[in-house]
Image 1 (cartoon, rainbow, N blue to C red):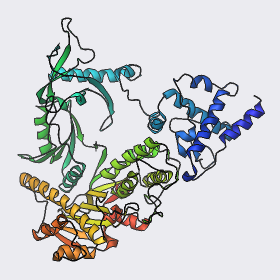
Image 2: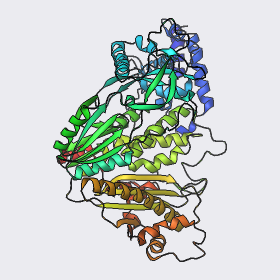
Image 3: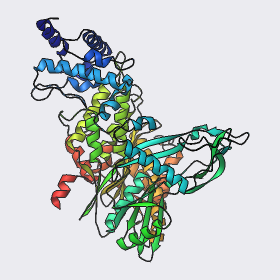
Image 4: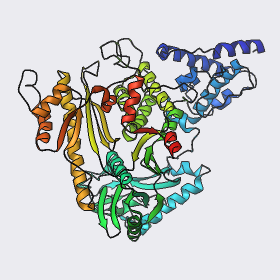
Length: 634
């Protein structure tokens, strides 16, 4: 092929224009794939594309456009934006840069040999440290010494804790279950290589091999509440990690497992196995009033937080270390995916690292930002820009991309970012059948996060406790089913510690009924809160809960009905009786219903998309701050 022909083909292949996501289609993607296949079969002189691509078994040749749909974006100078893990030679002409970008993406994808639906996960992991799935994979990595040490530590701990018996013959009539080593890297609060030998419990039979399966762990709302209480009380929060926490419980049933890899099997054993002796069952929150002061212990699997005065924490650490092997990390900086900053004026919880990970995963580092999570939408059928897939509308083909992003955004929304809760809940409804409109909405949320990467919840130090609840409903928020949206938030000293945004399960016939449902759901959480705080107060001899708890509602009809009492009318006679439980709590003086203007209700952000000014107002009311602004205040 001549140099001129090569330049023409390169220009033709790399010609790409910025298009709206709605203009993409599976057909255009297929054309790009076929074009790339043709070029790889007849590469330019000196190209190693064919050789590299054929190294993979059954390579799936995917263009860079398919690898990341956002590759249609160019930077400010018109250069292509490479996907995660790829580089473009900037010394080449622009058209040739784009050609190489397509070739390199396809070759790289062929080498790693993953299905097309997994492109997002691999696209983001190329630049990160590889976590092997098996020991054989780990042995091929330069980090094998670290993995080997982690595996040895796991086996040593199991022998020390007497987790299983010596190798024995499998008793007659007993089922043999398998095992595997799970390798992972923990980054909180420090980087650690970990190996866990786990039994394949899915082979067990209920009632024979096991009975009880439930073990409670720390709820994220409870953890935020405890952080808020600790901040107000000027307590410290320290982190401990129980080494091999799963190995401290006794197993009640007889369970036989295959011999772990590397274990010695005596020659006379015909059906080798080991009998499991240990299991894991533990509660999640403990209170104690010690001679050195009150102490709260919160546990999430093997991550333990101690909250209380410094002296009480130190004495509790000494006691725990005498019974368990533990790593002491001092003052907590991160736990269950949440970053924690201890400031002179309070405690700030955020997830800046996760936000950056999401932005990187979606390849949005060089894109613009947005001031609100989603565009303000109409709830009329056919006019909702984030409504269900329309007839003849092309689906978004990369399901794993969409679902992976929804999963990460959901954890963010449920942990420290109530400002995106409604938007994520709305787009999560289409995880089974998304369109490019919904994918564009996901990008919009991510661009908003890029605008607010260091935002989180700030629990201020104070002299007293103030608990308030706000409830709201978005009537007929779902444009397809006409179901409404429930939104409520529980506040501790003007900072949200628990919230929810969820589509109602029944179709409300009026805004009044939708608001009653939201109030009911909010007051159920108040019942949990009251029980939890009553136990804490009794044990620790502190006063936190003051009744009645104020509950703010912006619908006048719902407010009057709950405050003054139920009067049967044609408008409300069909309402399920359980939704009148809120009135019972008013009569019992557990709550006090109060009216609030819709413009002053922070729960509004949990039921609908809002314009920029109103959205900003609600985030401020929820106690959401930027880390930079807090640090600047000292």
